[in-house]
Structures are given as structure tokens and as C-alpha cells.
Amino acid sequence: MNKHQLKKGERKLREISVGQYENRLINMEREGIYRGEQVIDDELETRLSKRYKDWKTYRRTIRFFIDSKGY
Image 1 (cartoon, rainbow, N blue to C red):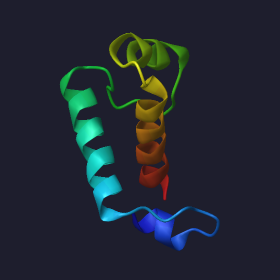
Image 2: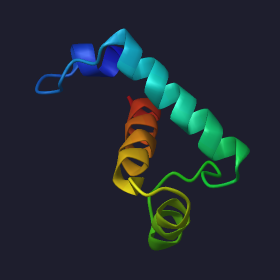
Image 3: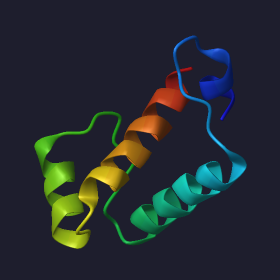
């Protein structure tokens, strides 16, 4: 959330959105879909698309998480 507030050009996230992203990430880790990868590769996208109908939302969750770790 801080990254989105401080980095110029980033859209601000609401508290509820942050909670939703966190919940999605926890569930993906628990199910073994996200395994701590530092990049989103074809294999990860395949796991996402097999599990989730709206897999691009979950891809965005992982991208936000990876970006926030480097911030």
C-alpha cells in the first residue's frame, strides 16, 4: 500500500483492496500455486489459469507483491 502511495504515477489502493490482495496471495501460497517466484513465468501463468477463471486478477496480485518486495 505504501508503494502505491509514495511512487509517482501509481494508483492509490484502498484498505479493502490491500486486504483482498493479501488474502489472494495467502490462498495461492497455501494451494501451492505461488511458490515465492521472483518473476511471473509461463509455468506460473499456467498454474493460475488452471485454477482460476479470472486468472489475470491473481497474476496482478503476484505482480504487486513482487514489485512491493523490491520497493
